[in-house]
Image (spheres, rainbow, N blue to C red):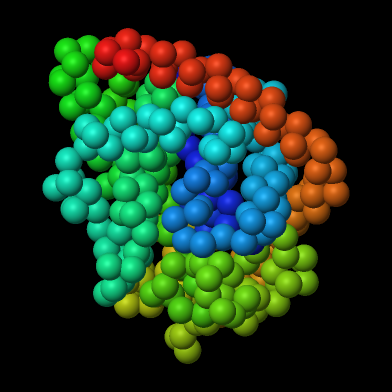
Length: 333
């Protein structure tokens, strides 16, 4: 059955293995399914919930587009654009913020985590950005949204907003209520230095992550130095919750090879970590190296990347403006 897919990636630069396995690899698979209609957005409006250097932001937008294309997303088949180039996103976010309830937003755990103890200093945008995310999704009549664990709650909010708008204005099914696409057998990618922390570009040590622009030697070296424990490889999946670094590396191997964690545990049971790391590094180099080479090549042709964004924003604007026109009619503007 044909699906209308919407998803976005923040242009924060230095996209890493966690971004690839958690989102982009899935985007490529969805793009490759013939009947799917996919919209992939570089969500630059979401990025400014924390202060951005304007030049860096511009460069990061192009790097994100380059990463999409280098990973295998076809811009002729799927729409790729940056959010700020389609004004409908901002307008509909305001309209939906008048539909959403404070109590719903107060329950969003990601705001609490990101704002930390001093919520008074957090921006209003950081608090309300799940409403903008709802606008992003609902503008394109999306039927399915690929989400990770950290975004499931935001998609629930989007569904609540869509249903409330439809009920308030008695317009059954005007906003499609999207379903989550949750990748089975996917293990969240954690830091190579600490299996209890998510892999992140904000972690000070570059050894904590595999960047999608890393060379073969950098990848091999980082895996060689990745934190492990003194025991042999786990022989039972039940051991993994107490051995977080082993769980992380096995999870990465499983996601790269489209295998189950259970099968990976069996395959490497009681092996030395050094032998396992050799095989993991080989898989990573095979998968990441061609992407890294292609990203660097594409970044030398900024005209081509800007052309993708321009053509994508024209297609996205065409869809979104029609939806906004109907919203105006429904609301009496």
